[in-house]
Length: 415
Image (tube, rainbow, N blue to C red; front, side, top):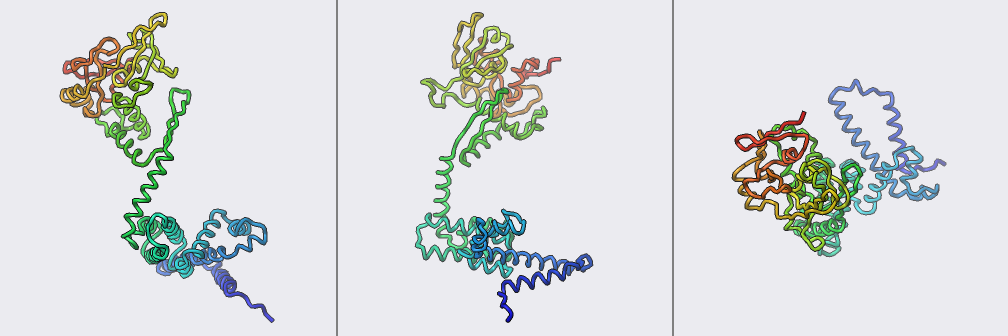
């Protein structure tokens, strides 16, 4: 008496027998219309076979158990020499359809929904189901909402691919229960903001080569605010100096440095009982010549020229040392141009005063023509607006600079 074969296994054997007949068939000679039809048919069949495999994996736990494997996905990957992640992905799809989304599971095996669409729909429905605690409706009503969401996404799969379905899934509640969408969105955003605040962090690692690596994780709104501020410094250059050819990340890094330099110290919290201040130590000779080095409070060193440039915009206090390293003067911080003076400079100069540069005044920094460290006054007669690039150049000893008759500054690289 012949053994009865289960229809599932018999069907799989039939499919394989048909495929065997196609092995020696050459599709290259098919007319265009038939190639088109064959492509669509095989894509649909391939997806249906994958769906059947996922359905089988979901109920074949005893196979893995019998041979001591962790789960069916691991057993299939080992026996077929297949991809572990791909088998596990199929297992997740099959399990989800078997336990939660039966309507989707049937649509997969009938070919109404392909496997790629199925993964996206499962993800969207699981995300929606996990939001049950955020909405104030009963379990029965929420179950009906989930059923409508599943039905809606399966229907849309006839018209849209995985990418579009993913977007629909993100806003699915607006389509099936608009009265709950606003409440859920507000609750989800509030929860996301709380998580973002808990995860906020910033680390600074000094690399020992004159640079430091800053790694930060901040809420999206803060990141957008920072990006907007930095892009104010990296807006298209019209000075013809080639700055716009620099890599974007380098320009953003330079903009971050410029942003810190233009912070108003008076609006920062007290630090150590005083306004936030940066102390540097430098020799009298370095101060007067602009050559040599200066030391920051943490022991790191910068050039004297950079220290003099920072004195124009940063809340920096110079501790000037004599020949025997005796403090001569701890300086004062009443040297920054006031907002009123900045406005007057903007009205007078209108843009960067470097010859040929047209960066607008709003993006420029106030520079002391006679350095404040050398007795220069903080007044309009001693002030001039320079963009960040030219403000660096005016303190760079590799460049010469001269005042033109119209008051502009012309730069020339030393030979």
